[in-house]
Image 1 (cartoon, rainbow, N blue to C red):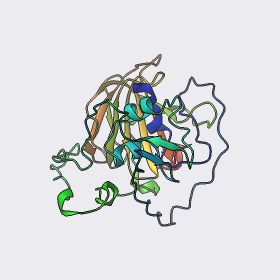
Image 2: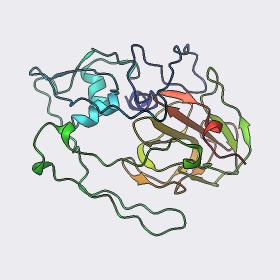
Image 3: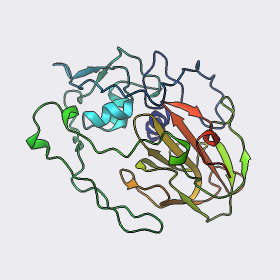
Image 4: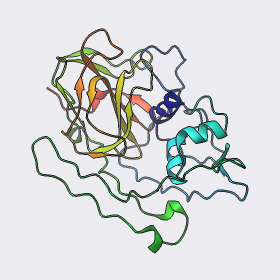
Length: 278
């Protein structure tokens, strides 16, 4: 189940009629038909409030992912996977009905929607950054989705991203064979966050990626950092651009390197189009 949860995150941020399968370098699954991303300048359409039906189900809407649905209802992704018999989390369909409450007789703890104690983050060479102000859910009536959430600034331009390591690019992006780039480095070299974001995964549950960190930057962008020797951040933690998040390693790789991906609206994009030239 852990691998399914990670695949759901790597699956992207937007539900389409047929979602692209999660991609690892060793996957042989056929690529989904490319979908033109929305222009960067277009304003984001606010998501419709997520309210379960009387029978405890929810109908998938455009823009939903299994991860966002779980967060909206305070559930674990693994529970939604189990309750709905999902074998491919990245292939949600608009109009699909999902159970979002536990079956009769099963007690499941509800996760808090708004963190009560956000972590204080510290860039590599800078002062500690205070956590964003939180909103008291009891003071805001309405469904869970009506509680405002704190989000990092959206990275859309090249200037917003930095290189996660300083080595030479050894593996180029190829949409069918390599969903990111490989960057050579020495084992133990620091891996830093390429942009401000939140850690949505930290672990080794997805085969082919080794020790993996996934950051969510906004509703459009996520980035992934694979093959690390050691992970230095925890799931749920907010990080700043340039903050050390891991150490270069060779977990699930033949030599020390960082496999780095950027995905926009669920679609892998060439990181070299976003990283500053050097």
